[in-house]
Amino acid sequence: MLLQSQNDVISLLPALPQKWNTGHANGLRARGNFEIKEMSWSDGSLEKVTILSGSGGICTVKYAGAVISFDTEAGKEYTLGGELQFIDDTQELQNLALNKEVTASGISKSNDAANAVDGDDSTKWAHLDGLGGEWIQVDLGQEYDIQRWVLKFAGVSEDIKYNARDFKLEASSDGDSWFDVDTVYGNTKTVCGSSTEKFTARYVKLNMLTATQNNDGGARVYEIELWGGDNKPPVPVTAYANTKACSYKFKHGGVQKDHDATDLGYIMNDCYVMYKNIDFETGAVGFKVNAASETNGGIIELRTDSPDGTLIGSCKISGTGGWSDFEEFTCETKQCIGVKNLYLVFTGDDGYLFNVKDFEFYGIKGDTDCDRTVDVFDYTIGRKALTKSTELKGLARSNADIDSNGEIGIADMVQLEKYLLGKTKKL
Ligand SMILES: [Ca+2]
Ligand SMILES: [Ca+2]
Ligand SMILES: [Ca+2]
Image (cartoon, rainbow, N blue to C red; front, side, top):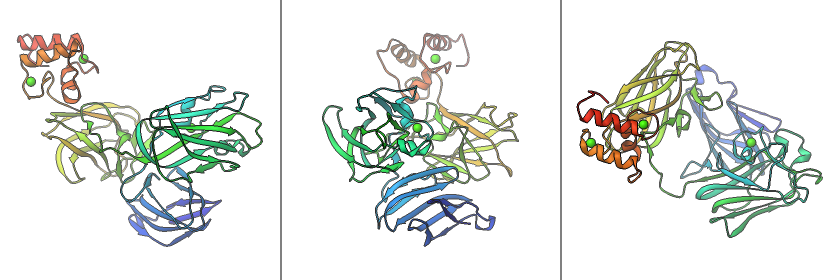
């Protein structure tokens, strides 16, 4: 079955026969006058779906445990990726508000402001100030183009009578001067979404005007979502700091975020994940990864720029006794220079192979100037970093942290000194 449409929820690929493991479909009708214009899937996983809204209104889509609801305009098309994230023609939209800094007029009963941007529909920010002046504000950390806002009110987890009735959204680039984004009066909806054009801002503030349907309680907001893309060219991410496995930009196959997205699970042969713009600088010598396996494990192939691109390393993962018993595995890597898209390609026998928590690359310990030899110049730079007169980043920082405890300390420089004096053979 490709589509199920019940209670105004469109469930995609609820049961896919084995023989249709990869394919595409178009022109499927769903309740609420929505049409699946196009949908593609591979290895049993949704890749992309384009939905045409016939008469506007809220569209709720469910796939593999994820749900998204968004407001639609009649005649417009909406494209979602395999994790139900918005995609437009030129870029993948992301929820920019997720886990960003939030401040609020106050909180009630430990319903923290951060609950409104934690990506969890069962947690809320709540505040009753008695005067009806509750507000909550998100700081995105930098300016973004915001293409769509979505607010999730009480109805996602409690009575719809606590859905906000009247509210106003404002935005600002500097936190000082504000402009109006949208004002909504008489809302009854649980999930309320944009009616405005896109705007550019760093700060977005939600002012509650009438916090519930009967104005008989405080403000409750379960999620604030601000969908958009990064204005600036992508910033490379260093290969030499801990990268969460779940922070991938693209996945292929049945891989899923597991254990509250603390690790990647359901990894089978031929699945892969991609991390964008990883900066290798002058090159790594090794790779380390935290993985767990209740079976015999498998292999993580490290490839650049495509799933069958240059193989820079191959890390064998063996059984650790359980899916949550994480252990560190390492492998050597070939020289790989500059900024690359990194693919972790998983291979092994049938069945689930292993779970992956996080990983990082490493260079030559002690080589603080990254010229691939360790000498007295490295010691000079290391000392400067220690006294904070030089700041080391990326590969240099990782190389200077000889004992791999996450900081450049005296212990690192003592080891480097001993090595240079020939008192120890290895760093
Ligand atoms: Ca929440
Ligand atoms: Ca050096
Ligand atoms: Ca250290």
